[in-house]
Image (cartoon, rainbow, N blue to C red; front, side, top):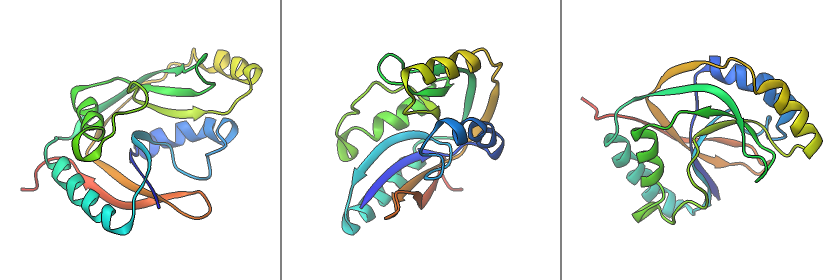
Length: 171
């Protein structure tokens, strides 16, 4: 089965992202707006139990942190993805790095650019039109992230939460 690890932003930020995703992201119906910490990977039932235990340990090593978004950006010319750019911080980078080393390896395929996708799989012309129209938006969101999620993919391609991990030590 396929699994992935993500952060879901607040409803307010998800609503904003979805206002674009419903038009420009073919994955709109498959998964809510999210920040990917670890891309999809395969695991069987036994392995996912072990992963879950390790994620619980990892979540205790990090405290809640601020998530700041203040612009729309694009991965063009590498690919035609438009996204909300998240300011990197030590916790976000640390989580990502820990999810790509040791037990969770291998290393990430791409450099970590924290983001929430709002458009993808666009033609060059469509990307150019959409990006030029929305890149000047005054996008400002700041919220506290206190959890991340292990997701699994259903047979229809949609993703659902397998388990949620709260950041910080339980008192």
